[in-house]
Image 1 (cartoon, rainbow, N blue to C red):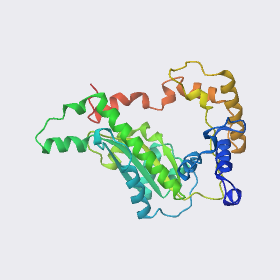
Image 2: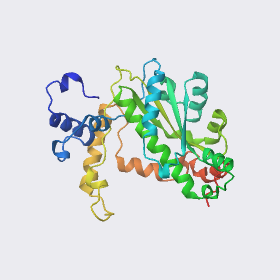
Image 3: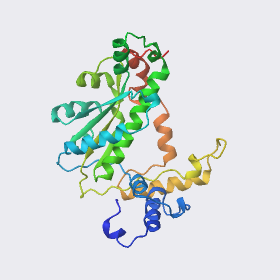
Image 4: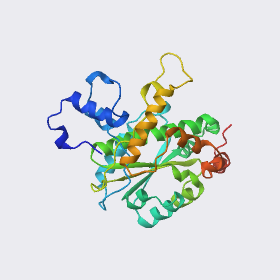
Length: 286
């Protein structure tokens, strides 16, 4: 659960950092950062997906500030190849939620942001300049737009969370992106990458920070190592099971969960067809 004011009243920055790292890695985490911390790092380390929200709207000025933060993210060649649609209408949100499998967080959140890889704007600008835009027809163009959208969305997420709001990414929009596109009236070369629910967390529902893999599993020095430590993976499975118990979740080892998620194309929930879908959106992917 989020660290409370009472817990941090007498905390030194090092105390708070240690508590945040214990949330993220478990009790036996190695020393990370050596006591270095800032308010921004605290917000990042304290992230958790919020799936229960109060029926309180997100003020327009908060949304605008978060989008300003999003626009402050890095963008390849300053192309700014992303857009976002803010959805607050309950009926529209419900129709989109049906695509995502009727998720509680979409139903409860007062705001759903849908982040878009947007090459349409760039093509329109080139057309207006009387220029060709053949460079958009390659895989690089689509990849660039997806990365731009992801960087922007993460900046917005941090901004929202720094202001006391909760968020949750929604990848399930890619189960049926064509229907999402029709709902939002998206033109060709605009693809819905994911959604983000935003709202004020319901304090009655306690959500802990989900543990992550030990750093040596993801941090490689100089060269990539293909063999994660069995001890590290075993420790992570134990840490994750403890989290699942606290959250009343079905216990499952991370290694088993990963194996199930990538075992078959059926596990992708229609996303195995994305290449054909993208071509239907006008992305040539040369």
